[in-house]
Image (cartoon, rainbow over all chains, first blue to last red; front, top):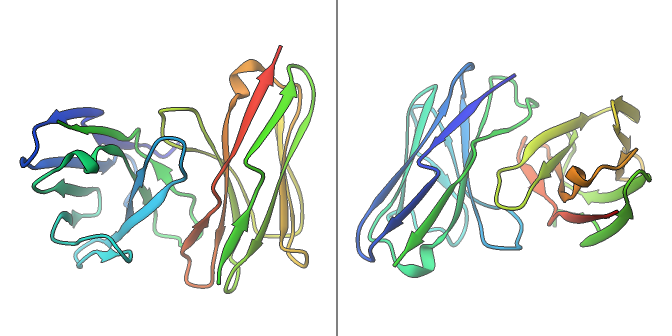
Length: 116
Length: 109
């Protein structure tokens, strides 16, 4: 089945530093990738949608200058949390969809970010 | 507006059957997904329905009624490992996924 690899699984960083999270589709071409954030006991919250080779579309309330998304190839998207603060601590999950728009989303294993 | 409703929490007994309901209101409709999410983990795909009717996949089945804007996930022969959150998500006319808040399923021995 389709596999999405997300790295790192967890990261602890100091306030003010930046963190990059990678999301790779291993056995299919992901024309669209999605980045979600999930706080404990809450539902998934879509942050942004990225299509290969174009700028990401951010959801309302998500700062594009703080959460930089790059989708440089059909198999790789990255999310960089810039100048991280403790309130950015959360579970970040990427997902990827293949060519067909009704393809199911396949999720990475998520990255647990803790900002101290 | 677009909306997905599903119960917040359900409890069932090991070995029993449980049905998790989901109602949706979306701008257009291109199908409905069910995902399973264990605590601290990412969601995993369970099923996709776009036509009316029941789709069976082992112990799990998913049903869709487009006219009623309604779906359910049926879990049979419940096992302790089925304790998780179950997320319902509808694909709208723009192929955007609209997510429900999830149903936390607690399985008791």
